Length: 62
Image 1 (cartoon, rainbow, N blue to C red):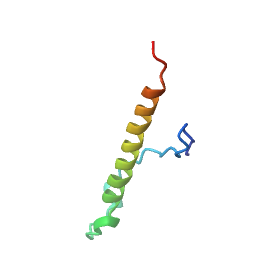
Image 2: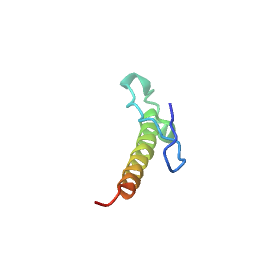
Image 3: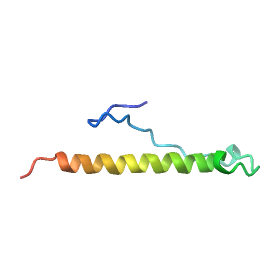
């Protein structure tokens, strides 16, 4: 499920780490479930970092 944060960027769902049985061990390289997870997790973490920074900037000054 995706939501719309204030910067109009769709929220990414946190990816789930693949189970051992999901890898075929055929050396798929960029299409390996572990590589796909790594790319998705990096995008998720980057977005969470950006949103945290935006929230900090949006806080009213005391």
